[in-house]
Length: 246
Image 1 (cartoon, rainbow, N blue to C red):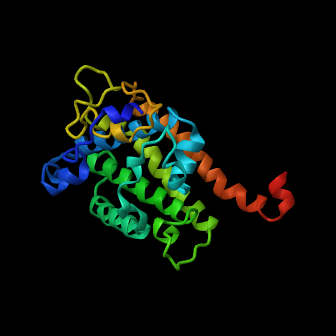
Image 2: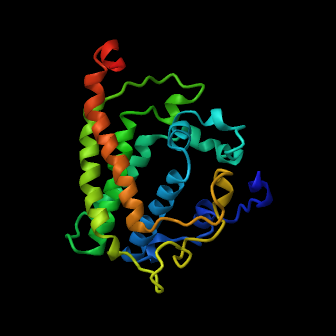
């Protein structure tokens, strides 16, 4: 309910910034892109950790409509209908093409570390693609079918964790705050206070203490390890009704 006190401003946000050429990744150094990437995931981890896991992740992934009128969630999260028919593989292939341009760099270079972050993203997305039906499959008028593929999901989770280890180990290669406070990212060029605050759950503190980048990755590592374990163990437990109930 508090969210209603904060007016939405369509001129804030990534889509508008890209369209108006206020955001141009070509002018950012690899060190700044690393910092932006890591800070973004620290914000994601802070958001997940600040709400019930099942409501934050499970419902948002599987049943956005089920929370449309829940007081703790903002209906504006559902406003972009374009996302309902996005194609997972188009996004994954675009990320792979970006990674190919960065793969020529050697370990130690900031460009290599940034490339590993892109690899982490598309490997994770591809693993989820084989476990969760994409929005275009789940849309009301879709005639597409979906079948879980745990083998491919497991293989991609292995690649995800390998790249993630490099990501965790190279946080310091990204820009660092001048005052040493890594819990506030307003000093980064693309972080603006309140830009996406209207999307937060009403129960999420409006002046939240964000995890720093290392804390965010430590938190996310537990989730990634669980997903890897999930792809290995669930197929064995799903062989019979009795094993699922055990």
